[in-house]
Every structure is written in C-alpha cells, then in structure tokens.
Length: 358
Image (cartoon, rainbow, N blue to C red):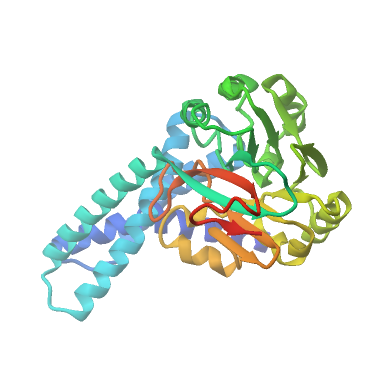
C-alpha cells in the first residue's frame, strides 16, 4: 500500500512538473507573483489522470495520446527553458515580464523546430573497409521507426527514401513498432522495398502484447526476422540478436553465430553489448538511444551508455549507433535528427574519402 502511494505521488509530481508547473511559472513571471502557487496544484490532477489512463489502460484514444505525448515533449522543453529563465531572473535584474516574454518565445520556437525535425529524414554515409570481402556490399540501415508513436505515413516517407538508394539489402535494427494497435497493414509500405530486408526486435516490440503473432506474419512483407540467428548475404555473415535477453546472453549468441575468416556484421538493438562483444564482430549496428531525442537528454543518455551516437571503433572492429529514423512518444526532436544510414562495405583496396577501415 505504501509503495503504491509513493508511486502515485511520484507520478503526480511528474505530471505536475511537465504539464502544469512550467506554464504556471510563466504566468507568475508575467504578473510578478510568486513562482510557485499551491493553488496550481489541482491543475495537476487532470494531467495525472490523463497520463494514468493512457499508460495504464492501453487506450488508443488519439486525442488522449496526442495530449500525453505532445504535452510531455512541449512540457519538457518548457521546463528547462523556464528553469533557465528563473535562474536569469534571480541572478540579474531583468524585469520579470520581459524574462517571461523571452522564455515564452523560446518555448514556441524550440517546440516548432523540434516538430519540424521529427518530420525530417536525413541520410548519412558510413564506409567500412575490410580484407575479408572481395566485392563491395551496400546496405541501408534504419532503426527506431516507432510506428504507433508515429502514424504509418512516417514509414511511407522513410520508404520513399529507401527505394531511391542503391543498396543490396535493408537492415532494420528494432523498434519498428511500439503499440498493440499497429497492424500489419500499417507496415505495408515496406512491400515497396524490392531488396531483402533483415530485421531484429528491439525493446518496444517486446512490450507489445501479441507481438510474436505480428512477427510471424513478417514474411508477407518480405522481411526476414533474425532474432538470435544468422544469414549469409553476399559473403557477409549477418548476425541478428533479439533484445529481450540479458547482455551476457546477447554476447553468447553473437559468439555462437559468428563465422571465422568471414565479415561478421551484428545487428544489436542496444549498444550495451559492444564492449564485451567487439572482439567477435567486424561491425556492429545499433540504435535505441535516439541520441537523446530531445535536448538535454543527449547528455543524460551518456549516463547509461558509453556509446550513444555515431561511429566508434577499435582495431579490427567498428560500431555505429544510429539516432533512429523515428521518435518514441512525442513526435519531436531537438538536438538530434531522424536518419537513414547508407552503409558501404568495401574490399581493403577500395578506399573512399572518409572511409573507416576495419
């Protein structure tokens, strides 16, 4: 009983802190009144109820979902902007109304930028050289599309990019969908991809009730599920690792699936397996971190993962952690971008500018 009460109180504080306090504080700055007014606490109740209804009941009500997700994103931006405004007001003799006006403008501009960023897809090239292959092999790599948080149209936009890329196969690094109301029809845009598609599950597929029934139908979309299995493709051993297992089990699976004297490419949703498994692979592709998605989470994710975004390497092995091609929760990005990776694996003699030699 005590534990449940504590959890409810924590949830209420979070709801009040994100959905109410930043805007109540702005109102107070505009009017020159006390920053925290206990009379604003009851406003946290409807925010808490909406959050509880969405997270606990699994409802697919779209207005409620929009309120929860976009309120969360805008509220988080507002929280740290207002925090900076309050510090500026306390340390300098700026007039409170002017501080509130600047903060309000910043919240509006940053929220608009984050909404635009979440709907923009960029392409990034990664080139790896290896003596283990005799001919170039090209892949497109995406992760964290998050259909459910995103509408199916977002996947269609990604596929618009994929079908223009000169690649031999498409790799999907997990979190393709994140909601139980997503159907196979919502993923039908992937049928437009003529190349082979190799997929692993991320943590969010595992949260979805009945996700295995969805995965069992992926062959109808032209998708090969590589959870804890491997596939030879053009002389490259593609190792797929399911996310729903401890790191030690992931590393053991990589060890059992790797092939000696072959280029081993491991698809692993989270980068936490990199350090213990880097001597077993030539290249590991990960996602999960979203590069923080919304500033300043870019810095906070570094508290959990040593490798959070971009290219890393040691002699003989490379790691790339993608920021993902979509967003979880609010369709907002600030300080990060949706991306598709154009991966080229070349024989050692074919050095391109910016190549990462493995």
